[in-house]
Amino acid sequence: MSFRLSRRMTALAAALAIAVAAPLAVAGNAGADAPARTAAQPAGDIVDTAIAAGNFKTLVAAVQAAGLADTLKGPGPFTVFAPTDAAFAALPAGTVENLLKPENRDQLVAILTYHVVPGRVTAAQAATLDSAKTVQGGELDIDAANGGVTIDGANVVTADIAASNGVIHVVDKVLLPN
Figure 1 (cartoon, rainbow, N blue to C red):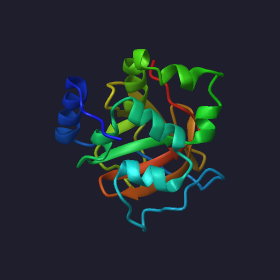
Figure 2: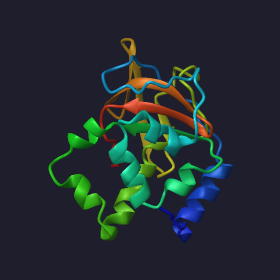
Figure 3: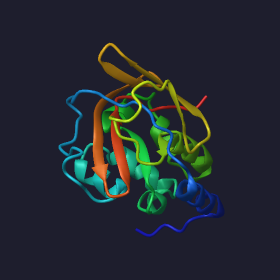
């Protein structure tokens, strides 16, 4: 399937290409939704890595519907807080289907870009930050207390999944911008 970048996506790609990463803390322990890859096992780009993991089918479908696949396959680097299929399934009935409709593309783009921080930010970086600015423009609240990390209330269940153009941190909840 081929996706052309709209003016908005082209601007997003340009912004991502020149953005400087804000360090943030990400740590966590592997959960049942954890994919098999780790930072020690380099992978393809963000999209290919998510596809290979097998538990991000809904996220990948949403990225494609939003026209962001080419951007997230681009040079990056990107840090993606990736909700699992189970996280999307926990949304109210009909939410995902509604967001995937063409008329809701702007809302879908806003939600997905809220899951992306510019730059390659690993768990080893700056474990003391309490927020990070997203590509969408909002701020993610980060809490690194009691041996775990939450991002806007979502638990990081697996950190540092390496991709050729960034890193994925698996979260157990879909993050919604305010």
